[in-house]
Length: 93
View (cartoon, helix red, strand yellow):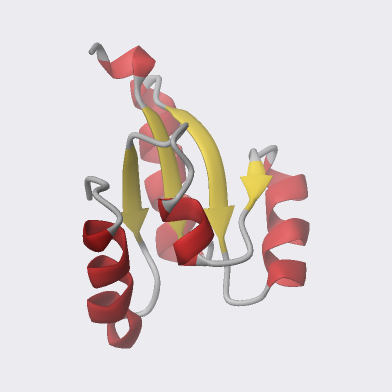
């Protein structure tokens, strides 16, 4: 699989999440969707940044077979649970 074929999801769309998204875009990675602190906040940010789908939760993102890799760019305190969810779903980080 080439870099241009990778489909990514990003958890967290604050400053660091947007930095991940920009880096992924520069590499040619397709951003399938995002998860934010709330669905409304995520939707507004996704629309303004031209992002894909807004997922309601990390669980729903991790369950989507269209996503190859998930970037965790949320606040540090949330990482452990989110990483556990992603790994238990058989996804890559």
